[in-house]
Amino acid sequence: MKTVKGSSCPNNPEFARSAFRGRNDPDNRYSGIGFRLKLQTNQQKETQMNTNKISFEVNGAQFDFIELEGGTYMMGSPEDEPGRWSDEKQHEATVESFALGQFPVTQKQYEAVMGTNPSYFKGENLPVETVSWFDAIEFISKFNELLKEKGLDFEADLPTEEEWEYAYRAGTTTAYYTGDTITEKDACFNTNQTANVGSYPPNPWGLYDMAGNVWEWCKNDYQLYSDDESSE
Image 1: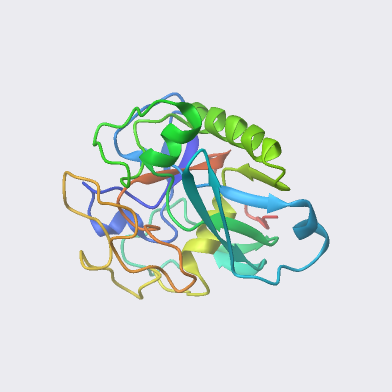
Image 2: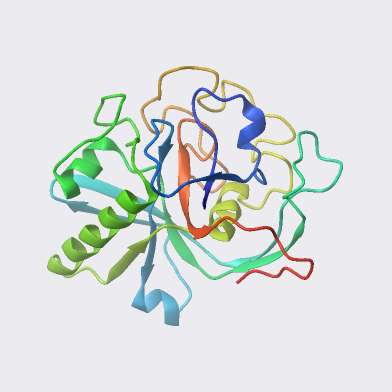
């Protein structure tokens, strides 16, 4: 099983808490699951990032990433958080600097790389969905080939669960990046239709659709946190 985060449009807000851990079979193609790209550069691994945004085009589709300085945070949820599940054991996690897609991968972006659009809901600015974890990995492989052809010194991947939650929280320690609660004015919930990416306000670090719209695949397998968990 692979971890998914963020919840999707038909769900209620409880599933979009920062610590909530969804899981799904990596072969599953479901209209509520998409993905978001992580980006690294060779230079980034050696020096601290000094800009906020990376933007470039691939086959006519623009990709935007927000650079995030790494750090240590409390992953999971406190025992008294409303809606908490037992697999959310709170622990310290550390991530290195990386860049994350400002939006989930859109249908226009997916088609620009793969030449197809598997989504149930159609619209070039809607998030791509009905993609398995393996579909996302295949997209990333082809995307990286295109980056090399363009001479761009970047390498894309899926974010780990630790990186994803770090980016979602954006320095907050509450159940949601909006505070102790989140509403339908903040994200795409309780509806049977996905929304164009960027339709709702971003989190404090400028990332859109981290809550609601579509679940997002993470790189790593779903597993319980160990008693002495400290994630890199």
